[in-house]
Figure 1 (cartoon, rainbow, N blue to C red):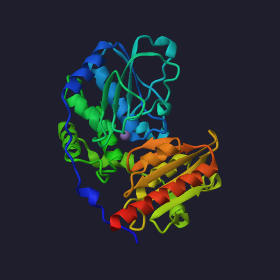
Figure 2 (figure 1 turned 180 degrees about the vertical axis):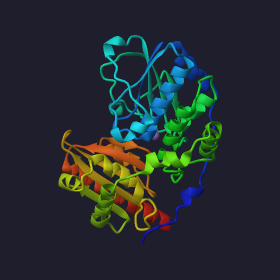
Figure 3 (figure 1 turned 90 degrees about the horizontal axis):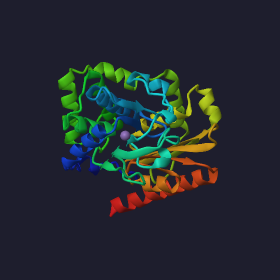
Length: 338
Ligand SMILES: [Mn+2]
């Protein structure tokens, strides 16, 4: 039997933040002349949008500071702005701001740098990164919502482009307020951004949601070839040939995985692709039933309670991951039936 009883939609708690954190964040930013802002590998609009928004806000507030947003660029997110190429040898006594990522192994591009201090801003459950100043709260929909709060509660400046990038981050990580990480506060922040800068949000949606017919056909392939278990778990291991045949890339799987919410028969689903270049399987996992990030952690991954990913070396571990997720769905259904 499949459950569609999404009780969690009603469980919203308000965010309680000690305002002292904003003072500490502003102070540590003020104290450093060189600042590197980094985020996770395989970035999404929240990661890059927030990174660029915070960089631009610090530059606007402190024009003499050297502030860089680093990490590999992604062509489809060009509308968010440009990232910086930085020579690690030119950086001394710097502050690292690391956002939207809880673990060092998933931070993009900091290997060759040394830092004097770390400011962490993240909405994933805490892992090994601990900031000198640490703002970690999984109450937030997105890193963008956190940075909007920081800007609005300090003397950090904001302009229309910064507001748009924060808007992109919140909208994309909350999947346009569909996900349960959305709280009244999320709407308040978005309302303020839209009002303060008269954001033309319908045209911003074009950047976020425009997709190619190729991508839609690939999604149809996944729908037609998904294996569904009796426990409401859907999974597919997508062959590299299929990716080529449809003219998409591995990251397309991580985009379309979000489109499978609200399919009645699915309570959790996992799409896996093989990354030839890094010789690793990439798993994208979503759930509207059991918590899945703890399972992802077991397989060299992590993420949010209901949206996670993993990079897996062996095919046998991919199969083990599918089994674990199916078992989690079974357990979830058993519990719901009692
Ligand atoms: Mn995020």
